[in-house]
Image (cartoon, rainbow, N blue to C red; front, side, top):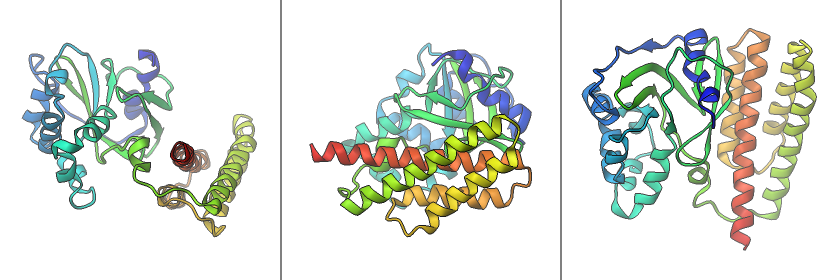
Length: 276
């Protein structure tokens, strides 16, 4: 990933989001020291320690870290954090934590267009910005530009889960599940194919309508889909109902479908892998 590409995240936060900018940390404090001093990242610090990543994030870097607050970790299902901190789950913990780190130092003044970024984990995070805020996957950026000597921290309100974590432990897909997943994917892909040229030609209302029809049709279709998929679409509908600007509404539905497609594609890949 180019450093130029990633720079839009927090730049977009300045343009569109109503987030607070934290005061710059003393430049002799590295990312770990800065997080500990902030007092809101105790769980993150404990997780980094358990994963053996403290030394890495104390290194030269530079790194950009999307840091979940203690409240974000507390919002995970009961027992999740305790389970991840167990020695036997170290690989899973490392996978999750490295999904919160992007190579390079990226500050809020560096503004370019961006919709995705590749993390140290190797998987991508989705980045989107509207007038209501900036989101990394389903999390909100709530504070930007917490500066450290070897990088920068942007605070988020949810823990990011890499795709392999979201589908881990899933039961093999039945014939109906595979059929329904393909039907949902085809419908959403068709809507995006129809909507993109309309949006680019300025027909944002028509685009929003097409995306809404596809989203609601998948939800109403009595399809046997993973909960991550229906939850992404339901959140999109709820957010769109609060969004009055047609351009923003189109993007809300588009992001919801992108999240659903990512989840379905991950689930299908998992099913193919399990069959072999």
